[in-house]
Image (cartoon, rainbow, N blue to C red; front, side):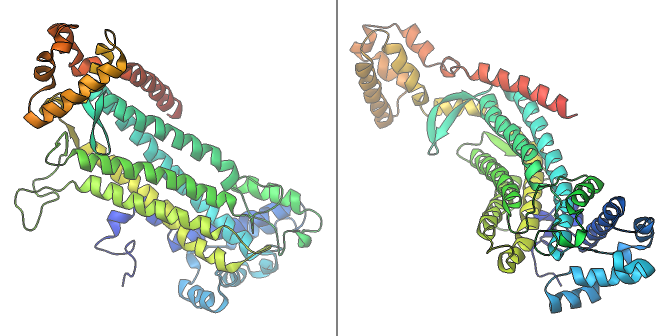
Length: 454
């Protein structure tokens, strides 16, 4: 019986991806633990701590698939950690080499290193999705980059911009996310090997060298000390993923808003019954935008929990460590799933360029007021120009007239500029500033970035 939304046969696939279900499954966790124990034995043998041939014999005999999960669960409830139960079963598998399995290692060493192996896989999946999203942004810019739309602040028309600029801002933000993830790896993807209290006392003076070889075996990094009680690397990973989720949630929210009936500049394509209402035959709800935002918000919320669990008393503290077991997989799972929803959203989006323009004109051209002020300020003081345009806005709204009609009937305006100049000032394409320059820069960066990752 499923007790979590992630395990639910009904809801599960909306909140998890197939990749993350595998990476954070019990089966994969056990496999990572066994891989860690084998790598430790190989490193110890290489440095002469284990007899020659011991590690290869251990590697041959240990089999993650033969671990009795039910027995492991019983052991975990009694002891509070899974490692002793696994090690006891692995020692039986190892036979005459049983004493060399888990030699000199602590529970933290194996659990943390196995978790890092899972995290490494999770980051790879997340990075692949981020790159795919960047390629989707690139296509949107290519197909609709020149479309002119109203930018919005506090959900109200602000000024005109290109749709390409809106997407370019997203794209540059996601490039930064990929760079953050890459930079963070040296601080988060490290083996843990410290022994009982960090001194590696049982390693006969070879602990530092063994740890280095241990990291090499697993293709992970290694710190000069240890991180039993220093969870900053894990927490940084969580915050990195939290930032990604915040960006994803914003895009989902924006996409839903732009699909609203009154705006209707975007829509999600799909089957006739996709997102349908049980009551209203006319409704097809924007489900991809909705789930993109919802799942991403959950991921961001879980990432904040890692900040709470980061402070540990002295050299170890189980009360915070245990909470990390639940939070960290969820942050990874939700981030990956939010990105998958965003990809689905971007693939479904249909852009209505005509509607973007009509929304500007339906508002009476008010969105071009900044441009009007600048044009008038060439002939009169800017403060006076601002007041004239502000009065015109209020009059246009009160009388449901266009800005052009109001301004051409103002003597103080008609005396200083012609109708042609006024018409040009009210053309949306004449008030987009350096939108195209910025978009072109991002297109060039995207092209180089994506080619460099392939």
